[in-house]
Image 1 (spheres, rainbow, N blue to C red):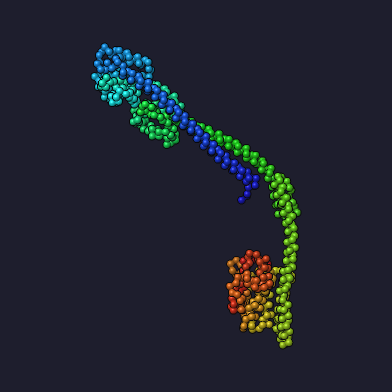
Image 2: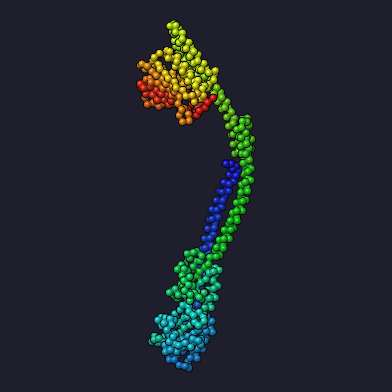
Length: 563
């Protein structure tokens, strides 16, 4: 998968950071603005309903004053106490005068206890007193002790009205009848309909029994479904409805059992929110694009020296070691380039030092390898040959001489550091054959090769020192005959080389392999280090030794490399 450039990734990162910041700021501003708008709507709604309450209070107070004044008129009381036909015209003229003075009044009705009816409306005049006495407005009036009584909305003939009723009493407080003033909807309707409560908002009035005194939709009084639709607003009282589509404000009208409720529709709020959101979105997108463009230009110019540095690094990696980067761009980039060039110079010096050290180490290793050609072994072998010659054992002299020649030929290996496993084992075989001629029956040996690994390449002279250790530190110190076994076995993806002896073993059993490696001397450690240098992590040596039971050296090689 192709990785995006540093420029693209930096631009994307800055873009995302800026986007997140814009989102956070925009969200905060949107929420704050929405809260302010909501608070404004709530405050305006509450103020409007409060003003409406005071208006209606004044309006009702005027009507109650008119009603009380009429119930205390001497002519009205005299007629109610002693009805006389000659007084009817004067009382009707009084009522008509009141209607002319107050345009909000539609009808004035007087019903005496004796059954007489005086009304400014001829249709009402035709009704029987007994029917009117049975109506709620009449019954409520005679139970309030001559106090004005407000009634819920009702339909009088073809008009919806609200009535103020008041009982007439004589000097002793006895009932003389009831006076009723019918109030037109027009004044309330004109006032309440002009209230600023949103496009779909409205106001209505209820009494303490949740009976509707006023509602702009007159059908609400006669429709159960319409009245049911008003319940959520009544139950809300003050605040937002459950669907958060309307805000309800209410205030009780002083001196009455009426409560005015204002239902403010929130389409204006939604409209303002929508405009605010699109404004914020447009501003954010514009700012984001402008920022993205500026960041792109700035970073492109700033990163250009980095691209040059990258190209220089690639050329150096391809082999042009003498190339150096140009010190251009911002101070930080120039400093990076300067340090990079200084690092290259230092690497060159280090590489030169390493090459010198490797050459020195190689010479040391060659010297160490040469020291493996033990002069005592050569002298002992020559003494053995001389001893066999003195006994005129010419055949054995020839065999030992051939083995010695093969031994040194394989040890020298034409100056090469690496050797095949088959040759290395042959070198061990010659060594053991020669030692067998010296030690006789005390030494027995066995070599088991695996032809599959004959061509495995490894450093020369790594098995002979291990076999030599087994002979001199194991078999030689043992009483009686000793046995050495060299074998090659396949294991997983590699092989294991075993050098086993049944000699005296190490005196301290249970030591780690590393400790036993150190105890094995320079020769054993030299073998371990050279195998590590060649095979790396694919090589491991384990030593298992027990007193009087012998020692087993296991060489694990997982990577198979053949020549």
